[in-house]
Amino acid sequence: MKLLNVEISAVAALAPMAGVTDWAFRTVCREVAPVYTVTEMVSAKALCYQDKKSRQLLRLGGDEHPAAAQIFGSDPGCMAEGALRALDISGADVLDINMGCPTPKIVRNGDGCALMRSPELATNIVRTVVDAVKVPVTVKMRLGFDGGSLNAAEFAERLEQAGASGFCVHGRTGRQGYSGRADWSGIAKVVKAVSVPVIANGDIFSLSDLVRCLKVTGAAMGMIGRASMGNPCVFVPEGQTFRTDIARRHFELLVSDKGEKVACLEMRRHLAWYTRGLPFAAFFRREMNTLATPEDFARLLRRMDREGDPYG
Ligand SMILES: Cc1cc2nc3c(=O)[nH]c(=O)nc-3n(C[C@H](O)[C@H](O)[C@H](O)COP(=O)(O)O)c2cc1C
Image (cartoon, rainbow, N blue to C red; front, side, top):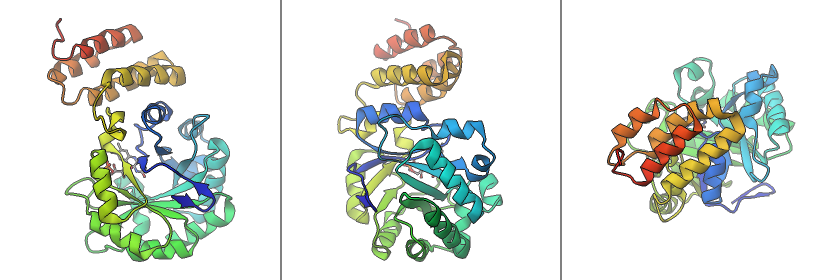
């Protein structure tokens, strides 16, 4: 797919997930398959105040290209300034605006999915950001704010006119959160309404789902979120192979990025996902929460290798 002058050869994208898809996790996924990546969402306001944590969230790997930096907010001027800072820090090839997040704290501020209820303001934001930056601007959105306002197609059409170069559409409304099933036919309506590329997202749990989704929606690419947690191999046809090797590599990258102490704490959460479906998942989960050193992790992963015999 092509966003202005940026050519993206991948057919799969790793969804931005705050608290999950940091540099280490994105790197591990990209080592498995050449996926398109997007940073976790970063507040435009925080960027304008030169927040340090935002800088870390925006750091891309040296060869992590093409990739997008994602920002959220609702003040057009602040979004433009935030976009410039995000691009300056990350060196990203694409700037993505979050108009899909349904978290109450975000929506209460008029950010994220709340913008789908204010098409005029959303248009103004896209126009202002497009004017300010030199890279393609994309928008990640849902089918509408709630079931009574399924406006994704008109909304995207408007934003395309304002200069958006592409969209990612999660096939649920904001009100739905993650409940029910993603409606891929709603994504197909957006694909028909605009002439720029659309990335389809929601309930893609395997590569065969992804192929099916592309067929149903006509989208240019499929984006996988939750199914990648603890399972970067979702991006390759073999499925769940080499799970512990990947967990090991993931931990190594986390240590190099955030140091042993933080890596041990953060890896506990990832390991809970890596062990999903293993025969002794409950045992591993209990053990995981007591792990404090890289040696503890190495020992547990060796046990996971022998999967099914944690006492062995
Ligand atoms: C823990 C978590 C954090 C998320 N954070 C973001 C985010 O920062 N930006 C964003 O656009 N979407 C975020 N999302 C939404 C995902 O990008 C994606 O749209 C959603 O999970 C649906 O895709 P899936 O069915 O493949 O999981 C998040 C989702 C989860 C589960």
